[in-house]
Picture 1 (cartoon, rainbow, N blue to C red):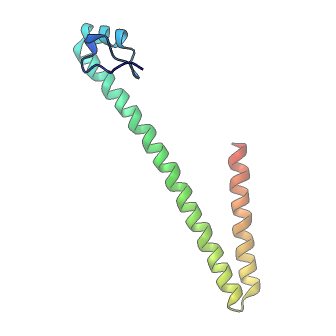
Picture 2 (picture 1 turned 120 degrees about the horizontal axis):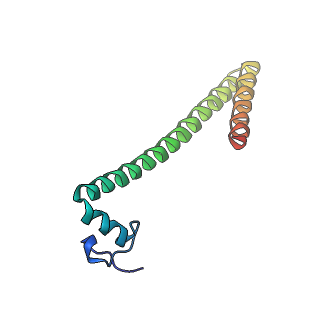
Picture 3 (picture 1 turned 45 degrees about the vertical axis):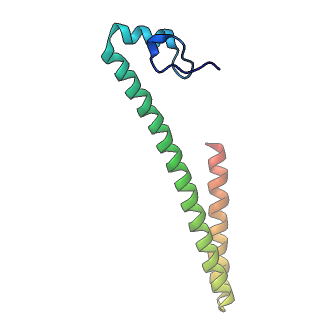
Length: 105
């Protein structure tokens, strides 16, 4: 890896932008360079936001599943074995279904 230049016109940058092409765009139209930089940054934040949403969904799904299992255990230990077993079974079947369908998609 080479050093990253602070000025793309210097020609010594290495990184996500090929320096010769990026410099020629900047020389042709200075506003184009700003547009490219904004679009690259927007793309970066879009990807970051998607990852955030995926992890949030995974966490909330885990919390919901654990809450159902806790309520199921509470029902069973509180003298309601049929209701607790049904709730726990539905929770388990739903989790397995989500993982099986998720792998096929």
